[in-house]
Every structure is written in C-alpha cells, then in structure tokens.
Length: 301
Image (cartoon, rainbow, N blue to C red; front, side, top):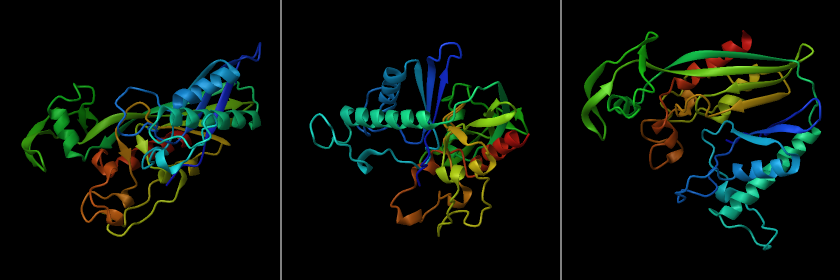
C-alpha cells in the first residue's frame, strides 16, 4: 500500500513576504540510489530542497511520512531525462535528481494552490509512551550494550535493568534485557487562525504502515493474529484540511505494523519465501496500537 498524499507549507515573513521556509511531507523511502549505495547521502530529498530553495528562497525541509511497508520508487517509476531523451537508469544519481526535482515541482504547485492564512496561535501537546517490547533481538542488543544506555527498558513505568539468560533463535543461549517496555514520545501540533484549526501535525516515532494512517487494514490468511482488533486510523481523528504526518520522529523504534497483518511465524503471508522485513525490525505486534492510542488521546485532549 502507498500513501498518496503530499502536503506542503510555506512560511513567509509578514513584513516582507519573503520565504522563510518551505516544508514538504511525503511518503517514500529516500533510497532511489538502491541497496548497493554505500555513501551517506540525502538521496532525492536533496534535490527537493535544492529546487524549492532556488525557486522560492528560504530553507526547504523534507519530512518522511508513513513509510512503513513502502518500497522506494526505484524500478516502479520511469523518469525521462530531458537532457538525453532516454529513461534515467535505476540506482543512479541522475534518477535521484530527476525524482527530487519533480517532487519539488509538485510541492511548489501545492503551495501555490493552497490556502493563505495568518497563523495567530500554535497549540502543542506531547506525551511519553511506553511501548511493549517483544523483539528478542532488540532485548539481546540492550543487554549487550549496543544502545549504550540511550534506550533503557521499563516495567510499570519505572526503569528496569534486569537481565536473564535465555535461548534465542539463531543466537543460542545469551543474556537478554527483561523489562516490559521501551519509552518513546508522540507529539501533536495545531496551527490556528482566528480560533480555527487550519493544519495539524503529528509525530510518529518510527516507520508506520500507510493503512494505519489512511485506513485499509487487511486480514490475510495465515497472519499470526488474524482476528486482532483494528488499531485507530490516524486520519480519521484529524479534521483539518492540511494533515502532516511526520514519521521517524523522536525515536526510530522500527516498523509500526497492524496487529492483524503481523506475520512472524511461517508460513509467510502471500507465500513469501522468507520472513517479512518489517516484523524483524519492529519492537512487536502491539507497538502500533500503543503509539496510535497515545496520539488519539493527544488529539482529543
């Protein structure tokens, strides 16, 4: 599933009208350069920012949205290079440049067609969230000091440094952290004018599946929790016309997956030959609900 929305916002100086910043919120992994790329790079968002800054001035900011389960565009989109008249090759800098420039143009059009407003107040709410930890590999990493104390475990809201020896698949008998939860944060922001909420921003501490944001959770045969209750759908609780979903905020706690779609035990969904990447890199099947319930509470407060 893809998230079809792109939201953009331009902030201008009230005295001069000059652009201070342009913000783009879109859901696609910045991995146009492909798996073989070993360089540290912003990938296509670099050219999104370059285009907008050249066209409008100020600073351009790019925020990834609901990018769990979303593959990079890669081979799925062909981009004609106007300089050569041929399709840009996958995994190249040129394709990243063409994609980023095109997204910059889309954002520019969105801003030009958008609503102008004099924001007179900002409402910000934040909340700590305790997320159940189910991933044994993450527990082993904490016990081994991989997180260097940056992400301690908790039980009943209090730090829990306890450890125990346990048999872990593929790793053998090793020490793991036994605390029940990890702590993270969610945030909710309203931009208001004359008492009306014009835009809403929520922050998500990981890579959330698009169906948790927009709806469309599926029940696949063979899922580990086929009959699990459906989590809150985020946009159903947002009422403003402009709804910004900032993924990868505060913490990267991994993938936030609908519990009804969770699949950590064979046979794998849709006849996959190996375990799905999301479950391997998620804190667990109850993480999405914990985060979404906390966000809904902030929005309703």
